[in-house]
Amino acid sequence: MGRRPTSSVLMAGFCATHNRQSTRGRCKPDTRTARLRRTDVVDVRQHRGDDVDLHASRKGTEMTAIGWEDVACNLCGSRRSRHLFTLRDYRFLTDQVDFNVVRCTTCSLVRVDPRPLESDIHRYYHDDFYRGQEDAEEALRFMEPRSMAMAEHVNRYPRGRLLDIGCFRGEFMEHMRAEHGWEVKGVEFSDRPPNHFGLDIFYGDIADAPYPDGTFDVITLWAVLEHVYDPSRMLAQAERFLKPGGVIIIMVPNFNSIQARFMFQDDVPRHLTMFTRGTLGQMLRNNSLRPMDWSCGQELSGGSVRGWLNFVVKRLSGEPMSEILTQNRAADAGGWPEFAGRLNGRPSWLMRQVDALDKWLAPSLDRVLDGLGFGFTMTVHARKPS
Image (cartoon, rainbow, N blue to C red; front, side, top):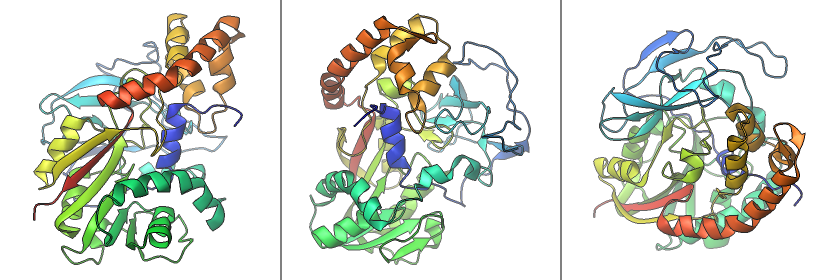
């Protein structure tokens, strides 16, 4: 396949099949348009303390200032939090803006805070995110392995009505309709992805979707919940649409993973909330949804630990964190040759040997971590009481 994409590229590539921007009903935030506060920030970029440039350019294009909002925890409502680390948009290199990732000291939910106003987040969803160059056939072919893996989750339950929230262009819906005979509908928050297959897709806020209560047997959210501005509200709406006894299937990145905690692979700022089994489980229960089955695995969206040994060696050798993340996180994996074969900007025999060892170790380590519940891709099935 040529260059081996890192786990973040694979996971972010799947996230690119959905645009995750809910629009209303969140807690009222404090808002401002200003520089990101620098006090008490532990910067993963070696504490360089450089100023935050909200007018930084991407590919030579002047960008306007971002409006910011401070937000309470979406799970418990507390505003008390502890700073974990600071990241930039290392995937698309949109600008040089810093984003604080914090953990609620009351319930442990992790979030970006402060975060861009919802009216400004669109700047981080580029055309490349939507893969708009693909036609219907290409889109189906690209998604086929993942659609088959997702279908295995849905087909645990009797065939019926399926709602895919964050359905993008409807690839998974089409697969479930054509290959498995489900009656499918979708919700997509952005009007940018085309409806390639002429499916029944509602475009807009989920609260405005024209579905009666108790309509669907199964609802899916594949790599959606981490993107929305009010995930608890999203789950409340989904619960309302489910039939009694219906099931919701959710896939999110797992913050209790090597990739998230030590390799900083959440797709900030597009990922606004980071979940663990504990915090997602509690949010589900708060919305009358009972978690039944948890799993971690590579089949839905990648998320391999591949590159972890490269990461450690580079860090120990003094490479700046920003440079390592740029090599490891670039959307087109263009930095991989340097990530795999160079150390501190110079060709390195040692790095080539480290990368070969990492490539050999990663599949076994993935199986162990997934089996223990510490893989990067986490899926849960939850049921609405009958």
